[in-house]
Image (spheres, rainbow, N blue to C red):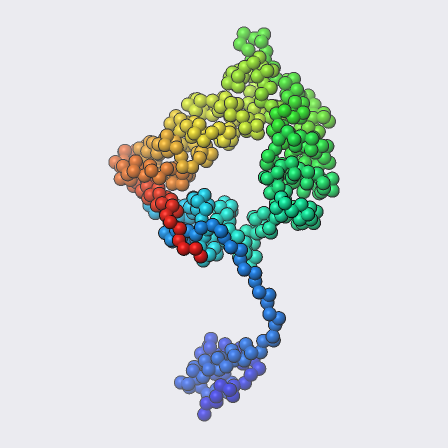
Length: 543
């Protein structure tokens, strides 16, 4: 006769039941049970009883403290269509593509950053149910975090305190997500500055600097002498925001800091103030090294690099020891020239304009070093006249202008120009040189690309297609086009989505791959237009 579940032994009953379930009641019948057809059902009954017994055997625990409510989000909710689009974008996962061949379908994860930028610009709040997926996406992509966290808003910080996987959101938030005192709370400001965690103090200083630069500098002055060197360096970096002549006395004192990195940062900031005393000292030093030799049949720049790095130069931020492979004198010269105000060169070199100075020959192979230093100065001082001179004409045979020494330098120089001028220069560069060197330059152009720039990119892609090569060599530019080309250009691309007739020397199947790539580009542009329209529709009901 079978025993009832209540008669089953206690002790290690749970382990016995698990073993029986894994092996089967025919092979392992629990003690006290009779093998047979009723054994499986009896096993389940015993498992139910043991489950209740195990749960009832827990010791009472102190009740957890009730969670505070999440902060409200004052922004308007997403329109319903945009909320559905967000769910689709977040449902797409990296690695779900087709290996090296992407097919004609848009890459939704690559559209998510642009969707977030639009949603943030238009002041929408996310649906609460989308926050976990949004935080997961930001966790996996650091490039996505600023826009994702800005869109996620205060509720994301509330969630991040409950899930260790999302703690990055607290680290990225000012002061670790803590609320910072306002300008009308001097006592709270002083208390947080003197007693807060380092991240909170950095956030506080940055917030005050953005609103009241002199007040932030004065706050920093109160504890500067007692701060650690690495902390002084981080605090000093916050002065880049709102930097002006009133910061000079503080920065001059920092030139005597015991930390070399602090001294170097203070010197860099002072060199960005053309009227500072340090900039004047650097101009005198650099001017004594660079001159125009008028005794030649054609005027030329002659260079006499420094023969030593004295204590005063070191105090002004000149690093005495060069990196491996660099000569000392050229290393010192470059630092002097890049720290000197660019406006001084016209006076020192015969009243010439930047274009005329850059066009002068330079004796004894000093041209690359001198022009590279002027490039760094133009970027640091945000001087568009010198940037134009150093970039030169985009159609120049050397494809780099008279002064730029690399694509990275050219990209930095372009960033000092206005958006329209930048796009026009890159469009003319592509028209002359194609796309092989254009990727970095396109990265500094405003989105969406201007009409001339977009047409230049499409024309260059079309030329590459007609050449019969595979499109994979241009996958980086094609990816940029999907994100940056004006959606209004989709209509112009229709003719490129058909498979072209392939020349005899074309790579096998290249035409089909190009048609597929242009189909994906066209589909992506239309999807971007739809996304933008969805984000302009009436908002949904307030959650």
